[in-house]
Length: 180
Image: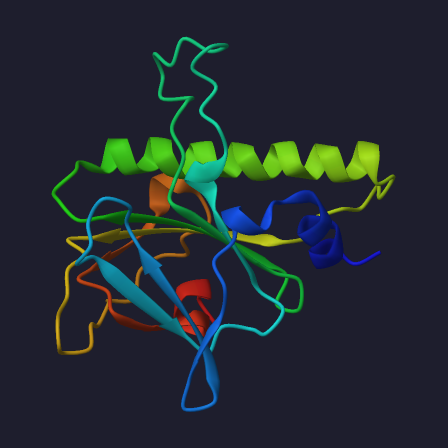
């Protein structure tokens, strides 16, 4: 069974962001809950990509103390089996220090680790979500802006501590976020 099929069976429809189309090409529209003017568009998203609202995963505050930020989660997780990549995306409409965003990205990574174990144990797929590249992205000061954003090249953003920081992101390309 394909990884995306398992995830589609595992995750509720309400926790997913549907693809939209602009000029016949797939895009996704991400917005931070509680900030109606905060929107980011990611263009040329792979057709197989699953976009998960990570903060729909219930916070484990009744189980964990949360002193180290282990109850936090980033806003979105984007998984493409075709590209073999998992993107963890945090949107911030207001200023936050990097340590706060890092904790949220780590928490979203833990959500995927949990899903991975569910797939292996309950779907009996021992290689479920194995071999994927992980990319961490913080989009800060997200607000409506008419001009396309640019981001500088940076070291590979393959850990929460080295996340790709993008200011005022609105018209992003999937491959740029992955680092292709």
